[in-house]
Image 1 (tube, rainbow, N blue to C red):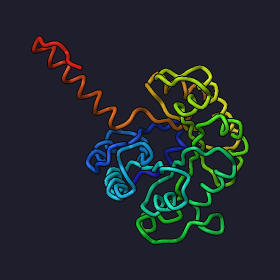
Image 2: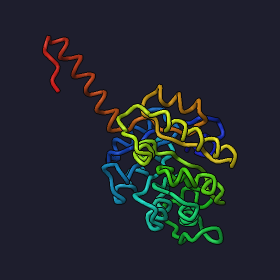
Image 3: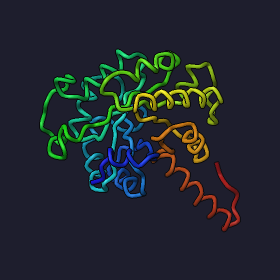
Length: 250
């Protein structure tokens, strides 16, 4: 199975969000050549109960899988680790105290408070697997505290949430990223570099991904399984209607 830590040493890595709670969809996405995927239990159409079959399906493809939990909840973070996630993504981390709680929730004592349970993680690598802990920077408060957050021991990286960050900055998020958001991403990436952390973010298009990489991001998502399915289906239907001489339908 591919080792996520080894992949990260190679430079920029690219993944996507999985929002569909289907093990078959997860298996397909694990076979398309991504460096990793993130199972989205916060905004995706899946629940904690879906995680085990999804993680098992992805294990069969060799593609590392992280889990974005619903919130900064130790129970959810520990559970994602026990089920064999290669990392956890924790939303809305605004202070160094939030980041400390996130780290303690995914680490066993003495570094953390995670309860030991030899479930799936134990048999596919255990603590040696070292699940990544990525905290999301999504508010102006988090941006103001970013250097203190980055200094929390045991943290592996910071993942900027551009949409929520834009909203927190008083900007309308309609797709294209405002210059202020890109500048904030660049600042977070610079702080990550100073602290030896993963600089992560969310990409909207291939061009946007390239722009963020130019600004220092090394771990970035592009799209989502649901988006790729919708786009591919729309393209095929549109092409078929053109062949049949029919007008496109919305």
